Image (cartoon, rainbow, N blue to C red; front, side):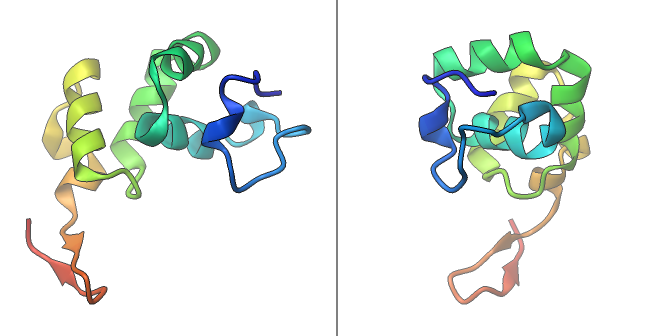
Length: 98
């Protein structure tokens, strides 16, 4: 179950019965992208650092800005962060080089 201060970051789901441990990639990715300091503190208490790093390495939906920031915070080499290795999508939906 999500604490009330985290639920605003999950606007697209019914949070009442949501189990974050059943969907760790979604939960971690969402909070890395949109979470505030309180949400990140909860995230770090709820999930292990290795699990957060795993998601940081594999989550392609993180913005380049968020991915770059969290790679620095968690000491993950940027070349291991999928969101930083894949070309960004242009306005027309086509992939473009960074």
